[in-house]
Amino acid sequence: MCYSVRMGIIEAKFENGVLRPLRRLSLRAGEQVGIFVVRHPDPARWVIARLSKRSTEDEDLAKGGIDEWAAALDLEDRR
Image (cartoon, rainbow, N blue to C red; front, side, top):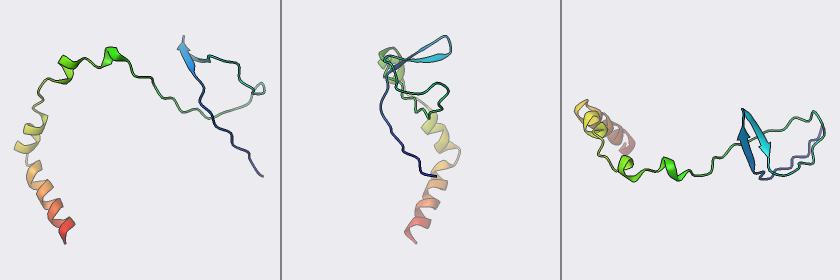
């Protein structure tokens, strides 16, 4: 069996749990398709004050011995 694969970018809106294409699609009723969902950047999620807060995660990992573990991995890579 040979399948013809056609891909394209379709803009859609998510409303009430359903993706609705912004333009008419040339598909047959009941036809199944694969979908990759890529969200458009939302400026409201990029709050600089929140993103610039200093995280102690790196320090906590270093105190937990992650630096020794990373050094051991680096040493293995050099062998």
